[in-house]
Length: 105
Image (cartoon, rainbow, N blue to C red; front, side):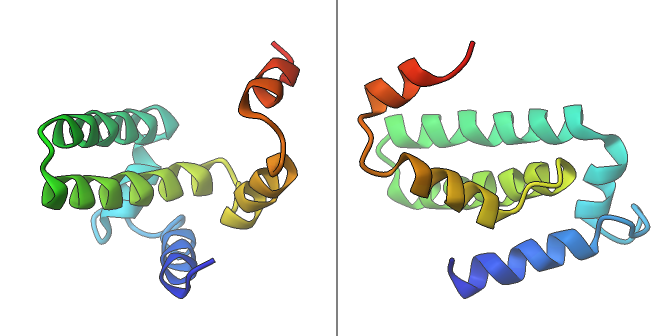
């Protein structure tokens, strides 16, 4: 995991109990998981628009926004990047079609 992601994950975790008036992240936590999930969805749509416009700079920025808001959502669910990386490692070498077919409904 990159140092940047590790630092960002730690910063986000440290804001979980902070005053919502003092931190954007704390304000997201205070609004709850539905708001955090919607914000991630908004950023995903903006990334799609940038990708379809072939705007590399905008796509880069929107991808950063998506990763940031995904980290906030994961922290809210008490899931770490290490958990996500372990899942990716578990799937490594498995066909995406096979992996998807093997998921329980």
